[in-house]
Image 1 (cartoon, helix red, strand yellow):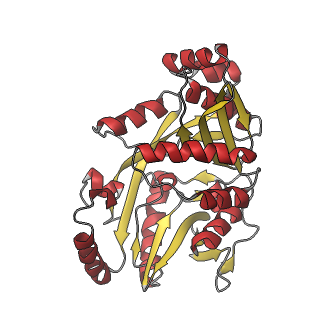
Image 2 (cartoon, rainbow, N blue to C red):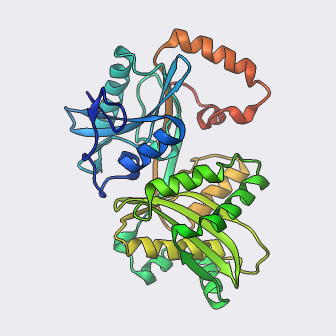
Length: 338
């Protein structure tokens, strides 16, 4: 394998390898944001056999080295077959183990779920609802929505909802985003971190949409995108409004807006499959209602240095024994190792 990097001059330079037709996780802009914000490198592993690339975040915590798969391996801007992907992942794990690149590969990123998982990894089912914008005009896009969603969009239009786009709406977005996360006790990135992300990506790879009831901002989303695919990564709601379909209307307008920028896919970034938890099932149903295709797969993780990670895991199990929210999705799903 060849290892590329945008930031590590000891590795093969990645600059110029990827254009707008690749997903954002291969891009220099996002890699530089992570590097400048937290010192994390983005390594891109290339298989000469499959002529395929896979981006992996590199995180160093004291003497420990962690990796996180950011996107499934791709060849010529397309996914590998399931059989090819399994061979790629197994070779990648062996390569990283033999070359002592990582001690542990943490749970893959929600956008980094794969069709399969490497041997001996811990894993759980995961997927995402993805809409092919390129084949839908305005009417067919709305008609692809669940009937209740379609009625909610029409209700918002009839009752005067207004949508505005632009990264200059970051303050309104952040206020709504922060308000939503506070209500659910979920960690919220600082304003400076979000501002840095938006600044690094710029208007060619980031978009903010805000929906208003009159002059009041009541919903907002932040999208990261390339021509290949748009990711719904941040959202927020707030205010007192009778526009019950405002967020659905905002997504509808954002889909049209990005389609007109020649973005092909719209990705709602992750759902748990066959989960019985009411709140998580609600998220599944919400994303399903927009009419996208469910792309199923797996999140996975694996120890590459078992002796070191055995000690690390024992320390963490003691530190976080009373903090179940520290468990990742794989642990929460309580699935067995392959």
